Length: 107
Image (tube, rainbow, N blue to C red):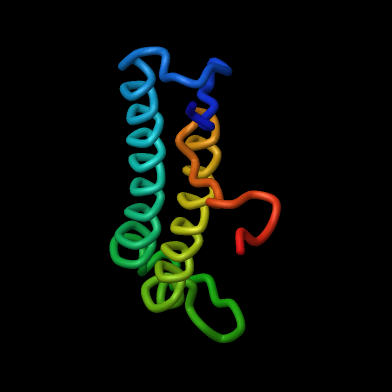
């Protein structure tokens, strides 16, 4: 007997349609996060560096900060957002990873 609970509450997938919907959500999330990453790294760090350099924070031009550190911080934050959001999507579709022995040590 399967211990996996799918989004319809049953123990078996409701058909192949759930896979299509799962990957559609996954790809949509990836596109949004990659668009944010491209905007920050390419847009703020390269294309808009001159206008952003007119803004100075703690003695450093904002454009320089985005080019040197802001894009990296944003990328790390996007990785965290992706991992957390995918956990939610996995749970929604019943494909989340669960510990092998829930409720304690199996020794």
